[in-house]
Structures are given as C-alpha cells and as structure tokens.
Amino acid sequence: MNRALEVPGTPGTSGTPGTLGNLGTPGTQSSQASLADLGRGQVHLHHISLDQFQDPSQQAGTSLIEQTNSLNAHELQRSAGFLHALDRQHFITARWSLRALLGGYLNLAPAEVPLIVTPTGKPTLSRPHHDLHFNLSHTGGRALLAATLGRSLGIDLETVVPLPEVLGVAARVCTDRELTELRSVSAQMRTAMFYRLWTRREAALKALGTGLGGPPEQVEVDGGPARSAWLRALGGSPESAAGALATDLDVSPGLQAALVVCGGAALQLRLFSFVGTGPRQGHGPESDHSSAEQKKPGAADRLSTTR
Image (cartoon, rainbow, N blue to C red; front, top):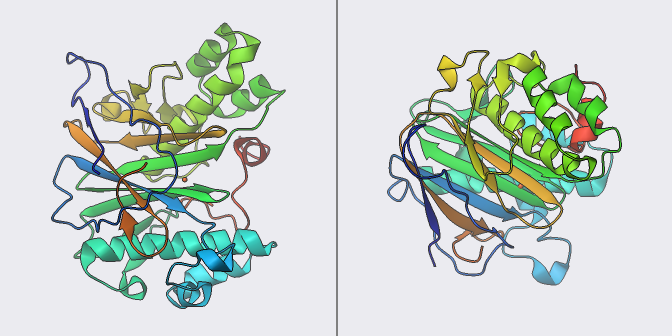
C-alpha cells in the first residue's frame, strides 16, 4: 500500500501546503525502497520502530550484536557514552536502521555505507553518493528518516511534555516575531504552538546544517496551526528561505514532528515503515545533528543550556 502526498512547489501558488496523515505504527507489508523509486521531487519518509528487540519473540532477523558490528568507530564511541542500556540500544538500532535503509538505496551492506560527518556535526554521504540527502531524528522508541535527491532537508521528532514556563523557554530560542505570536495565543494553546515552532525550527536548522548553537534569527518559522508553512528566514536571510517548506507529520499522540525541505520545486512525500528486516510500506522519529553523548533530551531539557 503506497501513501503519498503532493505538496505545492513555490510560495504564493494556489492551494495550501499539505501534511502527511497520521503515520501510525510501523506496518507489516514489505517493500524495498531504492534509488529507482526515489525520483527527483520525492521525499521518502521512513517510520522506524526502535523497540523491536525488547521482546525476544519479536526479534526480526538482525540481532543487536549484528547491528553493533555494522557501526563505525565514531558511532561506537557515541554509543558507549550512554548511561542507560535502553538509550544505548535505541541509538544503536537507530544508526543501524539508518545504515540499512541508506544501504538499500545504494545497494550496499549497512557496514559499507560511507557515512561522514560535517564540521558542524551533520551526517552525510561521501562522494559519489553525496546527491542522496537524508536526515534522522528519534525519541524514545520511534525514529523518522527522510531521504531525497539533490535537496537539503531536515527532520525533527519530539516527545511532547508539559512546559509550565513555556514563554521563558521560548524567549531563549525564538525570534521576537515568533515570541510575539506565542504570547498572542491562550495559555492552553502555548505548549502545542511552542512544539510546532520548535520542531520546525530544529528541522530547519538541520536542513541548514549549522546546528543549534547560533542566534535564533538564523531561522524564522510560522508556528500557526496550518500543517505546512513556508519558512520566513533561513541562514538569517528571508531570500535564502525562498522555497523552504516546513510540513508537520502526525506520528502519534504525545509526539510532534516536522520536516523541512529546501529547493522550491513541488515534491511528493511517500511513507515507508521499517521494523528490522527491511523497509515496510503501508500502514502507516538522539537526533543525528546532536553531538550529545547521551539520550536525546526533550526540548525543555536541551533548551535549559541553550541561548
């Protein structure tokens, strides 16, 4: 079963930018994604289960030891920094899933996928595979991987938790305009709006490839309830944001996710799900841009030390 969504290509065109419907849980119908399936203008979204090895009866062909053996020295060093076994396991499974899915596109074994890291910490592929762009985000037992050709993208997945001091948190990371909009809504709506802002902002920063350490003004997004919105600024410039689209992804209650794709041309989103033996298409997200050697914290935890 194929699920796809057409998204308009340039700001100001007729129609409203769309959203992929509820992603649900990883499905059961197997379908291998390949470069032949990934046409220009398409984005593949892979919904990944990281808890597949919690119950031995649910193991699906690739043991945690085999997954670990597929990682490189940098990934193994990162995995060793986790304090809790479950967090370490989620990280290993997320990285192996990334390698397995990219390997499916490149016709390579997971251990052979030539992952490199930019100076700002963003994973990418070395030449001659650099035209395949991807981004991964995970929280708890869920992960999302986005892949496309020739267009920078970023994805973010967060666990939504109550934020009693949401305005104080937002003041450290949002632009003045975003903060004004957040203050304009009722207190009951602020947490939901903040997570829309936060996931769109982080996805945009990951697409930009700069990380979270810069000034808030390098990215400006719309936190309104519309499921998709054009970015107002990227890299500190309204001009550079032209054609950069933020789209919310409905994963499940208690999770907020957003995808940002640059480039301006119309795109089609296709959903796959992955539970350990290969991409599974149908029923239907540690962030890889983070250098923290611990479980990926929620927004409130990460922002406690963010400017």
